Image (cartoon, rainbow, N blue to C red):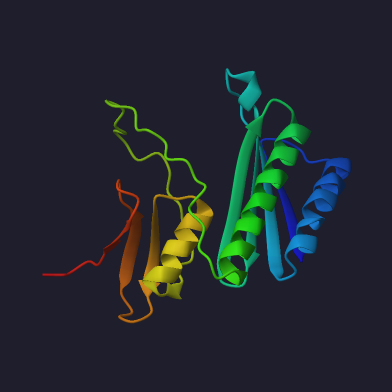
Length: 178
């Protein structure tokens, strides 16, 4: 398992890097086929002191991405809570992968604040799109805790989107060009 540690707006000392390596190394005991783990530590100059440090961990397991992110006032607290969340992600992944019974999603739905509409594009994100079935895409979306997931449909070879409906079921968007 390769571990990459990256700092944004902050310097990562050798002691902090070795602490992260040690904490993240425990994940390989729970799941042996983790390929790479990327740890991003960000220091944000926010007015809220309890959200100053952001720790984000992204683990690549075969064709699946597991991700956890937490904010805290102290760097080590952010790291610890993110590793704990990642351990939960690993257990959830193992449960979906190896057990026959499907468990209900543990993710809580966040209520949308009425009247809060983004008026401009503030972030662009690039990521590799993988070929998979809609069922695999729904599982991947649930593991990541997202409301939607973009993928290439293995049957048709076209870009599709799986999304979480308000009733708790999943929807599939298939674009049609006129």
